[in-house]
Image 1 (tube, rainbow, N blue to C red):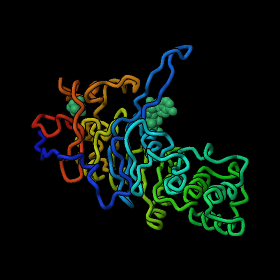
Image 2 (image 1 turned 30 degrees about the horizontal axis):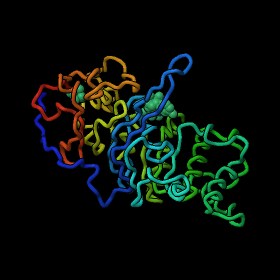
Image 3 (image 1 turned 30 degrees about the vertical axis):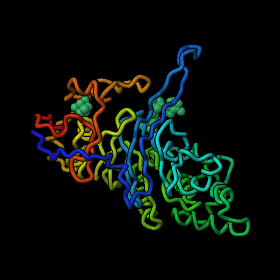
Image 4 (image 1 turned 120 degrees about the vertical axis):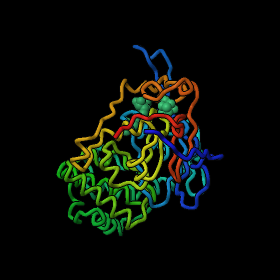
Length: 351
Ligand SMILES: Nc1ncnc2c1ncn2[C@@H]1O[C@H](COP(=O)(O)OP(=O)(O)O)[C@@H](O)[C@H]1O
Ligand code: SF4
Ligand SMILES: [Mg+2]
């Protein structure tokens, strides 16, 4: 197969271009963790968890973030939310750069930017009732008074499909799905605009996953929420996303509308990731060739120069080892960072 693509290169980074529909603009966002190595922690080192991440998150969309474990998805989400302080870059929300704000000045924004984690056990205090857990952020942010708190908690429980009597229960009395509903109610308590769902359904049974996905979709419709949906299950990503961003070793590899990413992926890494997703059609599934990636993901302590994927990429050439590939718009709204996409070269087909 040969690729004959439109090779326009945008003169400005597309994601930086101001868009009327961007809720959050992330510009050159990086996060390096300082760690100590060696038996006695004598060697200082830096984990390059996120490097130069630029992207707009559009109001009301579900943008999924995918990539192998350890590639920096959670770090990207937490750095956007200022749970991790960025090492460099900007997070523009409501016309301000959150990265520049002190903790005090961040507080009103924190209400609007929430996270739902994978593990509801670790998110909920086992000694607090469900009612107390949901009341806590409401009272902390001044969104309720002692007079109306019971009513507000009951409304939030109703929003996530639980009856008001759940307010008296403790987390250990709930099923996994009910606990995750409580976590979602807590995240909703202060009227957020943006939710990072970090593997928020991964720990649940498959049947419960479907219910929680439906709940996320209902809430999005009802409250106009915007989601960054971090997941490793690409079948779920295919179902829930408007757009998909693919990351490799702390850097963005590809970004595009869901349909384009799943039906016409451009980056060799995206092709390899998607080749592991089963086809719903049994005939196509039988004839499908899998593309297995060779080698391990390199360490983020010492990421490879140039294109970080070059140590595993079947198309790597000398230039890939030297030069970081530019972020290019290859089709409307479909961006990729790969030197060789757009060249008229034979490309091994992942499908
Ligand atoms: N607090 C931390 N201190 C040091 N290293 C970290 C920390 N958090 C994450 N990392 C490292 O950063 C890299 C990216 O991690 P993470 O964002 O959790 O990846 P993912 O969510 O894609 O699995 C990993 O190598 C991880 O070990
Ligand atoms: S830039 Fe080179 S190494 Fe990186 S994905 Fe493209 S072809 Fe592969
Ligand atoms: Mg993670």
